[in-house]
Length: 240
Image 1 (tube, rainbow, N blue to C red):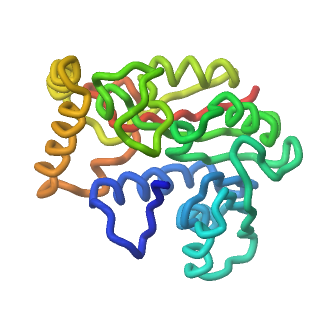
Image 2 (cartoon, rainbow, N blue to C red; image 1 turned 180 degrees about the vertical axis):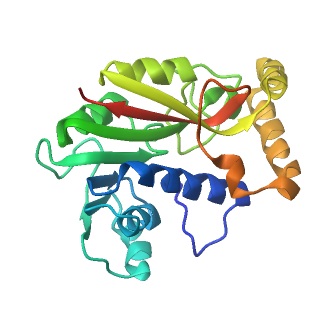
Image 3 (cartoon, rainbow, N blue to C red; image 1 turned 90 degrees about the horizontal axis):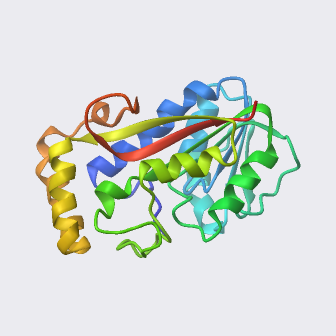
């Protein structure tokens, strides 16, 4: 399973991407009851609690995932629970905010994940989730093709992700993270038409070449109405 631990090495762009996404999400967490599902090593759940969430429940299917959170130390109002995102250990309408990052592409039941998100949120609550953009990560594939990443079940294009979220939530806003040029997207599309794996490698090389310019601000989420193509898409969904 892919899992970022702050005390272990990860590529600088991946570390910035994950941490910046959680920092951005804290704007929705202040004073709220938060569920952070597929929490991994728990640094994001701890960050939201430190930034003013009233209560945070960190859920992951793996007991190992909680070792990282335990190393961060206990915090009042921060709780751990073992559970599956398609069968959450929570009663209906419990939470004001549900964060679930880089997870929906990993599970067989993407609709089951979203159905559970609706169930555990109160009316007016927010569901904030993210997923890689297939146009950059698997540009030679369709939705029903198995991605090169062995941990992913599927990868979505932006329109496919929007349609999926809108089938469960009445309000959906999309943001992009880690932007690349339209020229780069077209180059990947041409490469992907010949070899998806070749296009994946080309995008990885582009990330490596950008290392001298790597910084956290490059990964700040932005609305989709800007030029370029995001590597990650973030949905902010509400039940009205």
